[in-house]
Length: 146
Image 1 (cartoon, rainbow, N blue to C red):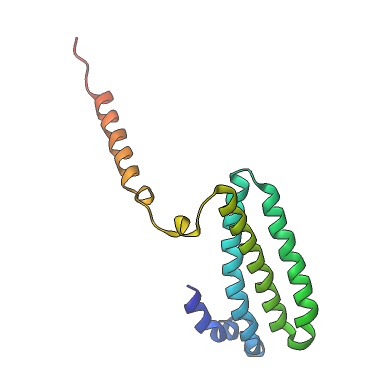
Image 2: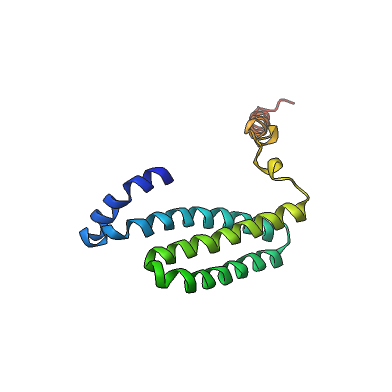
């Protein structure tokens, strides 16, 4: 969806907010990328919390806030709203990288191990379990003869 939204950004701003918002297209595009990075980071942070490492998720989020604040101080005066959008992207990127690094280190995984599709990822196992469940259901419903 990101490429479609990227190219449709000026039209979206014009339709939703009017002609006066079209100059904000650059900032909107940066924020689209930032939202994607933030989403990925949130997924990894949920994994950290789920596996019992809430401290690492706190470090990642706090570091992101510090990077965003510093980047805002530097970029906002020169680049305005686009600078603010880039600062957000920088902060979210730091959050993602720290969370991902912490997750991989704590779980003793390689990045390729997480990204490479594996046989256990395929839904064939769930289909087998559904079939087994259906088999049990038909045997329970069979009339009993004594």
